[in-house]
Image (cartoon, rainbow, N blue to C red):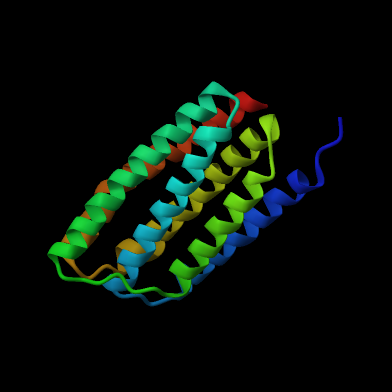
Amino acid sequence: MRAHPTCMKTPTLFATALLVFSTTASAQSINDAQIASIVVTANQVDVDAGKLAESKATDPEVKKFATLMVADHTGVNKQAVALVTRLKVTPEDNDTSKSLKAGGDKNVETLKGLKGAAFDKAYVDHEVAYHQAVLDAVDKTLIPNASNAELKALLVKVRPAFVAHLEHAKHVQASLK
């Protein structure tokens, strides 16, 4: 059976979007308002993809993983929004948050065109790459540049969840092969 041409392009699209994300985030000197925007956008991107996967995935483990992503990333966003509201920080769009949003939108559009095992594989492959890129950005850019102690503490607090998501995604990815 031949792979659908879109499936063959998908990893390249994801890798390009993630490279832009991690490169932009690393190169930028960012403030707390920009960090807040990046955090909220990164989580929303994963919520959007997870919601699509909840409805389209065929593998039960992929569906279960998608449900976890929606719940966990919605929870992180609630914490982030509550914190920035309390601190009176308005999230500020920046190159990284815009790149994340565009990449997330492109990912969802690509996934919408896939079905069955091809969808499951593309979704999980993206989750592995995306969580690795987010972890890199958290470690190299977001935590080091956060000047507010509470914002930095939130990033440090949620980091293990991103590590767990990455490991879980890798486990699901291995089960699909």
